[in-house]
Length: 168
Image: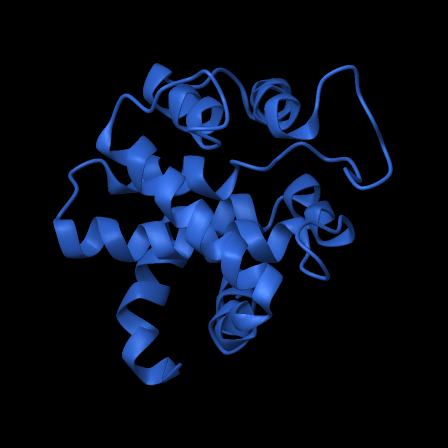
């Protein structure tokens, strides 16, 4: 991935998400394994960055809200490989993410709530109701596949640059 071609997207992404990226609980997502050896934080940034690029290219008027919800879509804060719940992780974690977001950051808008609750579609009952929800759902599937195949490593230079800029 040629990072110089990514600067315009990185600038926008950091502008939309800096406060979230610097939040200690969001930072704590680095300790949770998600897909294979990928952390929940890395995966979430990869997904949200992909969504940010889609929003930019599609001229989405609510891009900031879409990107921020995308970054927090897996804000469930537990080790899903070992910590089990009454419900399967696939259905449980979107609800847990919404609960954690609202407890930590305050109430969400309905569109953002639907984005997170529906991001596991078609494996969950919640149907995506907006273009942002569809972007998140599709980006999440693509990025998860890349995580499992090891192809998401190509995103590492962009991830490191986002992390560096967020802390400036």
